[in-house]
Amino acid sequence: QVQLVESGGGLVQPGGSLRLSCAASESIYSSYVMGWYRQAPGKQRELVAVITSGGSTKHADSVKGRFTISRDYAKNTVYLQMNSLKPEDSAVYYCYVGPGVTLVSHWGQGTQVTVSS
Image (cartoon, rainbow, N blue to C red; front, top):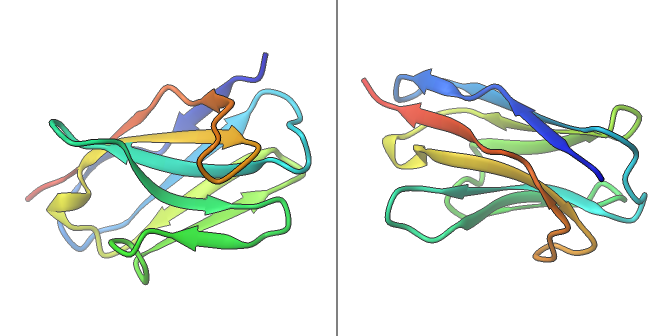
């Protein structure tokens, strides 16, 4: 059973940066995607970014130009670099792996990101 361990969340001021990491406990299928969703209180879970096995990326319009997803295949780890953070980015961020962009086989436990002055 693959486990996903997230780290890097926290409290940051508007305009600041955070880097989230998500490490898989064992090798995942080489064809699987890795990505990040987020969920704010009272809102639906939103796809933030995803990266395929070939390195193609997709970012939500709300984070384009500010967030960057990357992946270390040797370490089975996915990262989310978040710059120019806004209060509306505050949410619990969940990493995932799966056979497709919206097909999830495993979730991380979630990490809280709070953007506030």
